Length: 220
Image (cartoon, rainbow, N blue to C red; front, side, top):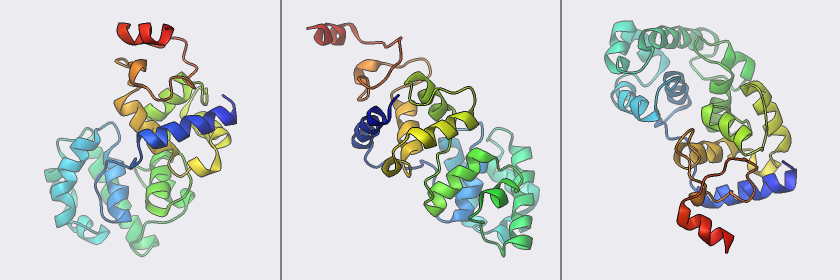
């Protein structure tokens, strides 16, 4: 996809999702970090349900560390991979206190050194927490990058690289948010319907699906 078409694509998505933002609920950068760690292979709904009771009781690294693994698991046990995530979060709390004065570092290398934090998590924290124009590639972003022809790629790292190249500068701060909303609510993995898609003209997907009545309208 050329840059002009990409610009139009994001313009339309920005109008479709004018308030696009992370659906994870948090108040501080530390809480954002914990929420994103918990969100791996879990829905935002399930994470928000857990953190609704977790964060009021343990809002800081020191408080969460004192809670211990059992205390943490009481709140997150219904989330996938809860035991592993609990251990990683506690290790992360300890590192934050020992190396970063209890603050979340504004540095990719430092973030990725934390247990349970990979490239996608680091990108989310840098973007949502610090306002960096990073692009976090989750399953929705990766799928749309390939399906629309925006940034065809074989893996998430390649998708991120290509998106950073093709996405106009003005759209980068919100690019992954728009793509996530589009992938979550419109361009789903299986039950997608191009009749309700605002970027159907820009999309290069060869297997576009339309409702019968919409197809008739388009062919008139």
